[in-house]
Length: 238
Image 1 (cartoon, rainbow, N blue to C red):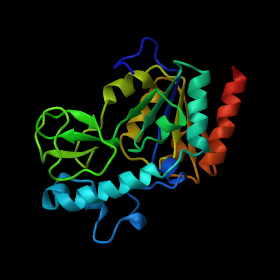
Image 2 (image 1 turned 135 degrees about the horizontal axis):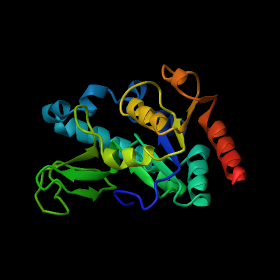
Image 3 (image 1 turned 60 degrees about the vertical axis):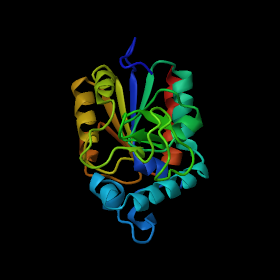
Image 4 (image 1 turned 180 degrees about the vertical axis):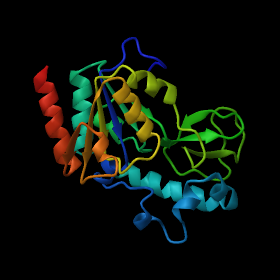
């Protein structure tokens, strides 16, 4: 996807952990953390510096789990919406999995990185990485060994491609938040920018969230049911 759009998308969908959870993938859910690994260890530079082997092992486990996970009907519905409205839909996701892409979506921005990629701390280049990542693995770009980390945005790091997202939000007609639990960033700013643009804001959640009053429309229930139903209505309106 280009940095900026020839024509900004009319529909921006912002997806969060609740969507992946309904596919059975919840990498940072405290209830699913391996013994001896806290969420704070897995999502911070400090945790990685203290025990890189333990953090790499955590992400290796999650990578293997992701390979065994399949997109759910909500992922598939959003991909179908993009297919039937080419150039009009942008999916922005906090999720580090590739479930949107495997469902068939192409216009996807990962603001918090991707589990199936690695980043070199020497040359800073990002490379695809589908297998376990070891302490001595070589960077596919510069060849340096022992300097690869997960391509995941950790606490204190800047989310990715925000400039592109804000360009889209400034022009969109519909902003849909799917599976986001609250009022944290960058979701709060995304919602505010979309509403300043006059977009209709829709929240999809299993139950009300702290951000619910700020949305024009609120649709509660399992995302695997509510999102495909909404997609069918949007496609039928064309």
